[in-house]
Length: 312
Picture 1 (cartoon, one colour):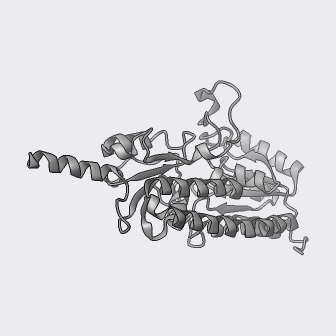
Picture 2 (cartoon, helix red, strand yellow):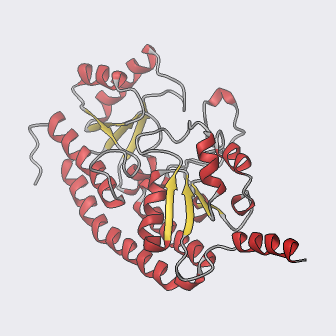
Picture 3 (cartoon, rainbow, N blue to C red):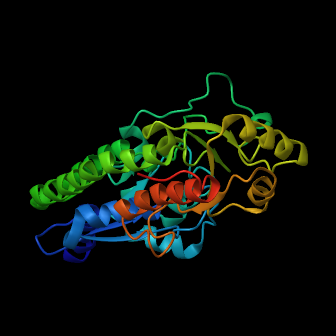
């Protein structure tokens, strides 16, 4: 009887998240930004790893066996959701054979459910529209206000799995939220001082950031999501930029910049290659530093494109 009872009892312990004050919640995430939030909020009571690295395009990730091994040990999987990871995450979850993080389980957590998404299609989505996300734009973490909601959601989820440290997680989440609150007005003021009002991007990655800070997204270098630009499309962008000045081009670091360079050469509008995830570059080691890098990129773009203007 004992030889049967012990394995079953051990399995029950494995199913439960941390069982004492000294164990850590093992967390895997789909992006480095989510990993940064989990680490910031969970502190010494979590062990976190990301399936992606900072400069990587999160749409396209190889479901490596090593990722399945990481997922097999996890108590919690934190994903973006809104179909961002639809092409690779299901394979990792199935391959992990870990019921704790299966879809619908307590250990599977999509942060997209915490926010109101933008750019939700109002018509039936098909392949002719490009790589459209049917549930809305999944790049909401670049909006500080939505990111704050995610911070609270992560704290709540960690508290659910590890109630012994619930107050610890809550305090750390509120500290992060407060630090963002302190920065947002300063970022807003700095962007306004540049005089930049319109933004061109490669993809729609920066849409939430642009919207939050009162800017206008006038065009994308890709004609449709996931479709490379044609010469005709580039020519059309040149006309748009000429009409919509002052403009800054912000190119996500995982896309080619040759097209932006062509536009820059013909219009004089400078482009900046920007990070869109924590740890995508050396100067984006935290969320504050990530958003700071985007604000600084707009300032550089304004200075290079419109040198006659002086930032006050």
